[in-house]
Every structure is written in C-alpha cells, then in structure tokens.
Length: 298
Image (cartoon, rainbow, N blue to C red; front, side):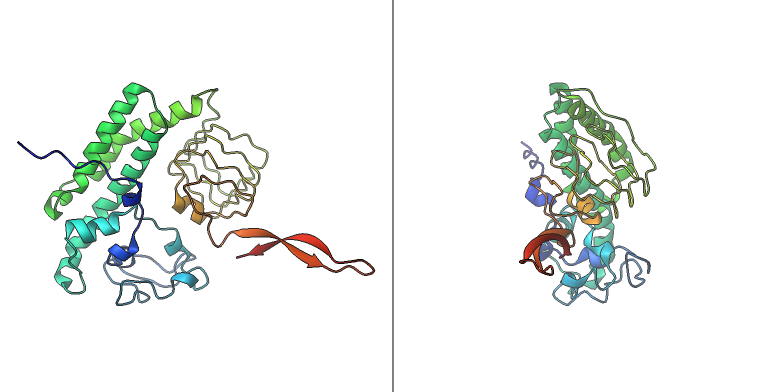
C-alpha cells in the first residue's frame, strides 16, 4: 500500500524562514545596478553583503544602502524547502558542487510555492463548492511537485502548470468580488503607471496584472479588489483601505508607500519604511504649546 501524499504546506511553510535557508535569494538570482540594486551581481554568485552565516550584513540598512529590491523579494518559503527538503540540510558552502543544482531547484520551487500561496488564499476565500474541489485538487498536485528531487524538479513545466492553475485562481477572485454585490470595474492588466486614482471607486475591481507603479491611490478603498500580480512598486497607499483586498501579499505591500492610516489585512506586516503620523509639539508665538500632526519617516 503506497503512502498517502503529504498535505499541502500551511501558511507558515509558505513564508520565508531565512534561518533554515542557505541565503539562496542572495546567491541564485542575478541583478543589475539600478534604482533597486547598488551593484551588478551575476546569477549563482553570492552577494558581497552575504555573511558566512548566510545572513545579510546590511539587512537593517538595505534601502539606505541602495538595495530596495532586496527588501521586496519573497521566496514564499522555497528557500528552506530547497535547503532542508530537496538537499536534506546540505550546505552549499560545505559542498560547493551542489550549488548549480540548488539554483535549478530554487528556480522551479519559488514559482510553485507562490502558486501554493495563491491557492491557499483562493481556498480560504470560500469559493463555490465545485470550484473548491478543483482548487483543492490543484493545490495537492502543486504540493506534490514540490516534493520531487532535483531530477524531478528539472522536469516540471512550471509555465504549463501555472497556465492550468490560473483560470481557477481567476474564478475564485471573480466569485469573491461578486459575493454580496455586483463586481467592480475590470482593469485587468491596465497600464496605470503614475495614474492619479484618488477618488476612483476600485471596490471589487479586477486589478489582476495591473501596472500601478507610482500610482496615486491615496484614500482609495480597495475592498475585495483582486490584485493578483499587480505591480505596486512606489504606489502611494497612504490612507487607502486594503483590509479585505484579495490576493494581496507582503512583497506588494513592501514595494509600495503607505502610512499609519493605510488599512492592511491582519496577516500582513506594516513595512518599517512607511511613514507614521505622530503628534509633535509646536510652539507658536504668544501661545501655549499645541500638538501638530506631522508625518515622520521611520
């Protein structure tokens, strides 16, 4: 009798656990000198800021030192999967010959883990019963793919698998957007770079794949809007309401700008670089000290 397949990973397994990884996100990807990275780094070469303990030597100063791109990368737990499961805890520093294979495995597991995160969110969105069955099946199939060895991972066609799963995720988003009311505007894939969207009704909107780089979303209600794959780099979310936004993940929030008034889901963390409204004493001639609101950058 064959063993039962392992259950799909839970939310904790789909979050990066750097202490159980070997700094793969600092080794495997290539990056070019730009506004996101202060230096050029070829693929497969450790970043010079990576210490012998696999920790970033400038982690608390990445933005100030010219590496904001590092702060918004999310492996969705693929790093520790490669390190602890695929390679059984074998460290590439002690076995350099394993690094190319680790890089191959990471390149496959990272998008699979991202898909697992989206599938978990879709299941939690309470889709119709028939769609739920399909989502659970896709979730189990995706989880099974992540358990393979290097040769099996190499054979995975990630693009084809993602193309099969995406319609299910889109269906779950559409069902959630229309539950209890009419779905909002369809802005899927919209080119909204730098757009002033203040005052725009984006409740229940379809923003899958929308380019919102630098968009002004101050005060906008994004309740039940589907932001799967939306690019929020530099988007101004000050005062925006994203508490019930669909498929919003931490990397999107980290890439945007916001403040203490920005509403976020309880599962996400307010980025340290966002501004916070504080009360600062201001002295006025001939008057007592009064508090004034001022934005302070953390």
